[in-house]
Amino acid sequence: MICENCEGSGEVQEHNFDKELDSPAFNIVICCFCNGTGEVQEHNFDKEAVSESEFKRFVAVQKSGVTNMFDVNRVSSLCGLPKDKIFDIMKNYGDYAKKFNTEGDDEK
Image 1 (tube, one colour):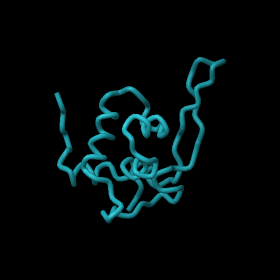
Image 2 (cartoon, rainbow, N blue to C red):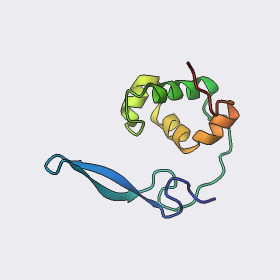
Image 3 (cartoon, helix red, strand yellow):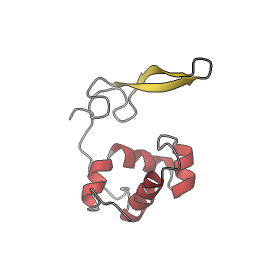
Image 4 (tube, one colour):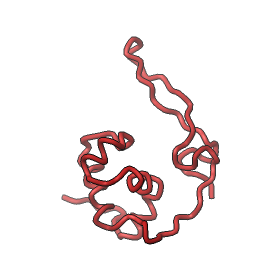
């Protein structure tokens, strides 16, 4: 299955804000979702999978807007999840949203 994040190229652009230029520049880096292969496997939920409670804590931080979700250290401290679970959620977000029936939820 082709990686949606890098569209199969194995590389993504990363913002590199240069303080002197006051404008964003981009670096090409290896895609963290497919590890540069351009392909991902279907997610198989197993005993190590993220629980509904853990997923909802991640989504709460995401919806709060208090941090860039790629700042995994900060996300971990805000939602109390280990980095490996955060990466799993990021990589398989759509699968978890379907599994926990949270697609399109807009909490008010």
